[in-house]
Length: 253
Image (cartoon, rainbow, N blue to C red):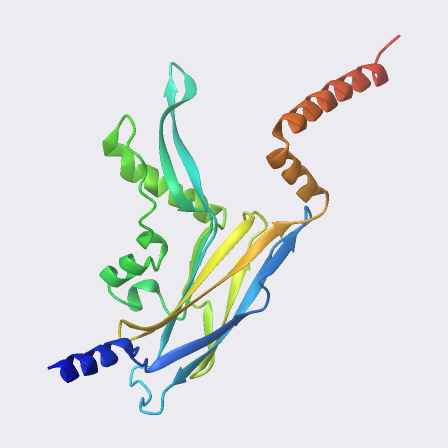
């Protein structure tokens, strides 16, 4: 009995071998942007490796690359006409939502796997479970706020899906171009790569990259964050000086 238990413990301690694994690499892990930044991209390269006992999949491979930006709280407001004046009449808070989300794949999200798996792994914009606002004065209007949140971020290019964003160079080599739009937020971005076949995830790899500001814009941003009081006083003094200088220049004697 003791020998049987010992054998079982050894078997449980040995990790199960995976038939497929991935090796991935980014063209850069740090992207610096300035005030003149007009957009760029980070290239993801990858290779699929199989063990000696695994033959090629009859249905081939699918790939989903999910990119998430820093999380933040966002408020979406609804404007209504009140006595002829447009006013904010309702609002919803979206807590801890990705400030950027991109799905790059070799086919549409719905064709990768069933809805349960996509929701569980948050593959696709509609599968982001965090996009559930806190209830406001009118709980029945919550779905419309979610739709507005997605519409606004899609229009800004911050939420996107590209069903042709992954290209297979060979049956086992692939690449994907991760877009970095001009209004991309700064911070750390998480990249999850899913290897899928027949609607089942075979392997998953994760990496990340960072977007930072440089130059005078970085100095202003860091000053506002680290020295808020002095930054506010300096901004107020600059505004007063600008107003006084304008009055002197354009004064009519």
